[in-house]
Image (cartoon, rainbow, N blue to C red):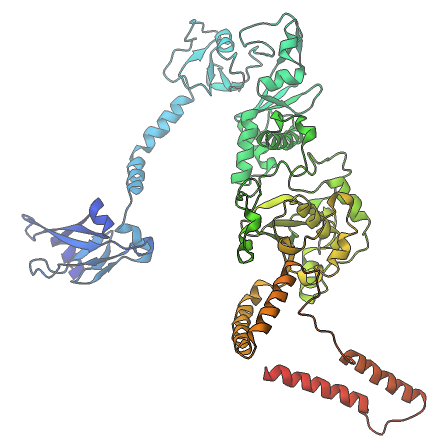
Length: 640
């Protein structure tokens, strides 16, 4: 027998981890090491302190202390044939694949215990498919002609046909099964004779009921249900309302206004709304799930209400936006809703009258940034939309009331600039834009332009617009103008754009060509709208340059008289308050410029050639002067 086999036969060691709440907070606990003697008559226990690992990635390592006792020699811990040697002051490292051998959680123990009861769970689930130990008769009246069971009721009760219908007058969307003598098969409450009476309580009949569509379907969280609907047209109709109102008052959302054949319950629309926000599930996949809940084989399903379902979802989301914006309680209701009024505004951005002090306009210039709104502008070429047959068949709901600009006036503006090119002529930007808009066949929209709150990433009201082809002036100007137009509260604005160096050129001239409803004025003075020309990658260089210039200015200031300093300081302060005055930082050029000199030398060379004068050298005097100017400029760059 091998040495390892002898150890297995004569030596048994048990390691038990004991965690104390107080000790865990100190990242220290104990293990119990039980050692059985060779004659298997005595058991000795030794408590050894260990330090718990500070992170989950180090759970396989624990520091052992106190193994210097000669009565407890180094042991081999056996676990399914794997040996780990423990020596004094040595870390215990389990193999990476077997880390769970030494560290187990409470949930692992529960799962291990559950595996012992697998047969019990399976037997109970199979029991639910049968009579469940009950007699094949109605639990209420004792009738045994027809046995029915409800899959959605929580009690173990069997019904006859009449008792089942009576029980489900207020629960018409439960799933029921009928017993055929061998097993339970699916049926519907409609087949049992149940109908939904609208305009009256469930247990009250109508004096003049009107049947709804024969193929009326209701989409619920547990599947798709064919139901029989009766509308009220008796004397109570003035309280019951129209057919659409009767459906809505039973929390059934109709897909159409007249002769509705499809409805969805409010619970279903709420469930899908939350699922799309949380799990990003597509409407098609959700509808297939409802089909599978109704009949997982797909044999008995002969209808398709997916388009009606998606229309109801769009309407539901729009109604929810109106409701949360309080439009149902305002005078004029939905028709009086203003542009962008359905949006959730940023609670931290400066909003006079809401989160700013009354004297915010008196803030010193060095603290005005606190009340400045920073707007980031950019485009996204992943938000595409395929072309539709016409806008009438796929209209926008509440166009301009939310985050997107009003569609009709936006299209009218863009059509005036059908031949306009992209904003940027930068090679890198053009290559990126070409890659983003390369596959645009069949798309009506290739992307969107957007403005957001740069500090808190909130999308601003009326700040999103479709891009038909690339990132053009007409699109981005309209989006920016629409955003700024709604911010006429006098707070300072800062516009940040990755290509602002080109977009800002002639921006003031283009503003004058804006449509009247988005005409804006660039404020001057303390509330001046500034265009950010420095990108984030230049911030560090600007800070270094600022430090250097500050030191130079201090040295220069020492050479000046106090009178000159006071005079120049007053002029600078006056100019910063009113930039319409003469620019102190602009120096008028005197004499001929370098560009004019180059042009003059080129004209002299052309004139000499026309007169027949041939140059004795390949490099003319004018070319020599130009090259010397370029060398001088290069020397200046290298020396600085």
